[in-house]
Amino acid sequence: MTRGPGGHSPAIVTHHLKGMHFPASKDDLLDRARDNGAGQDVLEVLESFPEGEEFETLADVMKAYGESDQAPQTGVIDRKP
Image (cartoon, rainbow, N blue to C red; front, side, top):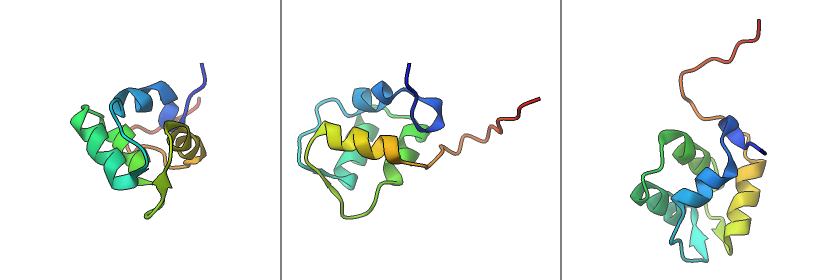
């Protein structure tokens, strides 16, 4: 399964954006995600999107999510032995 930033499946983002009407701004996405119970990790990735960007479709959101290099700040350090 393909994973996005923070190791989460992109499906988690689509789940938390259920009911989103497009076009939508970054603030619209954040509001919908919060209303749908998104965790801090998802919110941090959405918050990393550029200000002023308008998303025409959910596919545009997923493209931005895939391009995001914002790793969620979970407090967990991934160390390899």
